[in-house]
Length: 347
Image 1 (cartoon, rainbow, N blue to C red):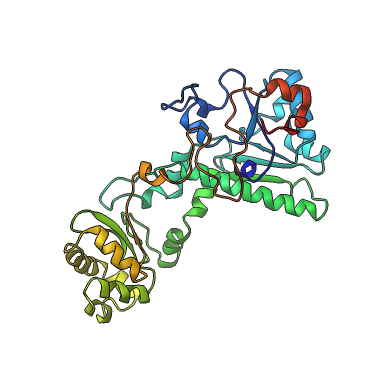
Image 2: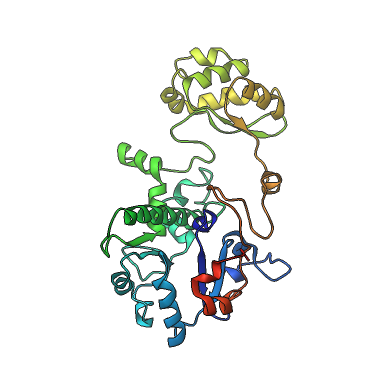
């Protein structure tokens, strides 16, 4: 969808009958019976249902591949080759083709990949949640979504490389996995462990490398305070009416504040209890101290320009051209026209 948002013509190939699994991931479903999960990630595509056990449909798939810049698929190893769609053979036959396989686990490619498993095995769940609580997954399928973004980035890089001259089959064969993406996303959490030799734990809404950087309670409700450097902390202390905190050796630098996080949080809690959150936020913003409210999803998307049909607006430069397709909605046209189905009107 990211590539399609940026202008790529995308044909979504689905199995007949049920189609993409996410079509059934609900409720909620819209009035046409389309799941919200499916609608969120399938705009700007056209759909054809192909039975890869049918030689005629396999031949059609091969003809579409022959005219494609990129194939993206997430079959288990050998599944497509057994149906006459061997990636290496097709890459050799079509020197401009790029092939991107998305799996779950590089070392165990036969394992089906699901987001929560990747979050668990990557360590993401181990560092998410309250310190005394259970490991917790992210509120959205973050490993799935990040892997899609990684795939889009890798594909764009492969297209640029292709434009500079012929590329080998190996260079045009991209492999991404949920686990590797999730592990890469551990970034500073993983680096903390490698540098310190100590395992990471859960810090709730806090940050193991910054303080104060957390959800704090004002007189009426909680809000977010996110101090990223020493100058911001000095400004924060002044707004809170606690100038002495900025000169206290325990809090003078970020490193000292992290060590004395508990004492600092207690001082901040006492100060914040004196006023309502909106008053603190207004004063902190005037002083250039990062802060914010915790909004519900309904509040957050109210003015974001999202659509019940086409989802949230593109995060990349791009546009919404087509609604998510019904299963095999464009099947007859694609069978008749191939990629020429995209010529003319967007519909």
